[in-house]
Length: 113
Image 1 (cartoon, helix red, strand yellow):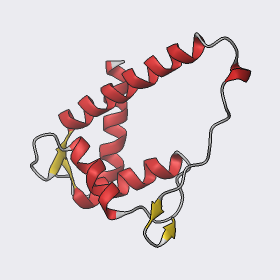
Image 2 (cartoon, rainbow, N blue to C red):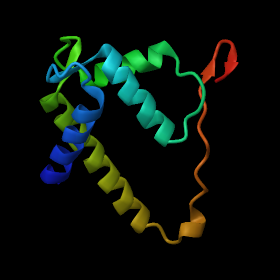
Image 3 (cartoon, rainbow, N blue to C red):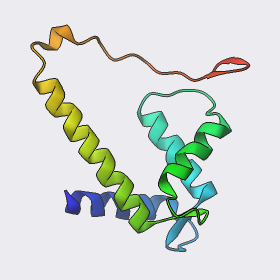
Image 4 (tube, helix red, strand yellow):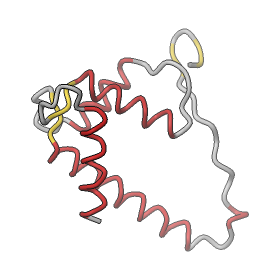
C-alpha cells in the first residue's frame, strides 16, 4: 500500500504543485479537490464551504498548506476505508441486495447544484 500511496502523492504533486513549492496551497488544493469530486460524478458548482471543509481535512496542522506527509496520511486513511468497505460488501449475501449507486448532487440555498 505504501508504494501505491507514494505513487499517488507523486502524481498529485506533479499535476497540482504548480509553483514547485513542495506543498499545495489553498488554490492548488481546490483544483485537486474539484477534480476528485468530478471523478466521483459530482456535478455543478461546489460550495465554498465544502471546499474549505475538504481542505481542512487535509491540512491537519492548520498551516494553510498541505504537505506531502499530510497527503500520505489522508490517502492511507482513504485506502483503508475503501478496503474495509469492500470487505463489508463481499460479506453481503448478494449484490442484488445492494441498491445501485446514486448520482450525487449538492443542495444549496439557491437550489440543487
